[in-house]
Image (cartoon, rainbow, N blue to C red; front, side, top):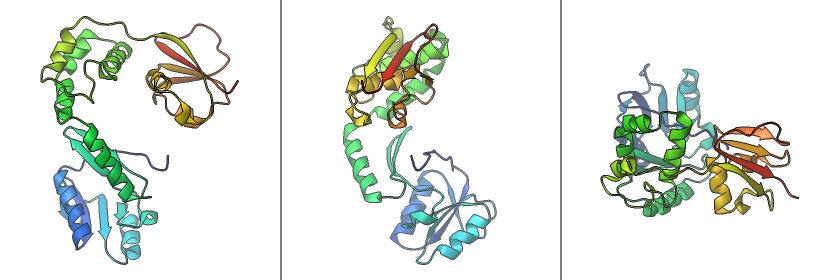
Length: 253
């Protein structure tokens, strides 16, 4: 991973934009859409800057020297951050980036994803936000709440985000009898050390597991497919396994 993707709140914040023309105008529209306030180079309150000029090196260096994070159009080597291709289903925001390698590829990926996501995806997200207190009341513990949401939002689940949902989908989910979440100890014997060779089921198990026990031969490229907060333990397993779903990753036999 060459960049750490972050969502930066700029509503009401000052942002420097330097340059004229189509690309600079596009940056200004994007900033205004996110609620930012566009200012000039001399503003001392700004913390972000977009530079869209033919010879940006001197200006970029000067702004960075003042502690600003700088984006220079078409010059990834000068960028502190890059701007992804954005797919919006407010409040859902999906950003597709390539760490500056190819803006064209990021755009095409975004367009493909655009066709996959239902128009009502944002309403579903807002419904979950509005129901936070009710969800916490039904599943008070963090782990049980996470498992319930994982099951509801999974492929084919009652709140599957890739399917069109009724306006009362969240309410009906909360009112329905609870189905037992997947739990237990699942062994995955790897066929190769390429993460693309994981089956869909294996990838799903890895992405939802509470803990991952693994051979030391299993590469980070595969282990990184697990949840970021999943506990990792190198094999051999000793003692009692934790509760919930546990995946045991074994390298090539």
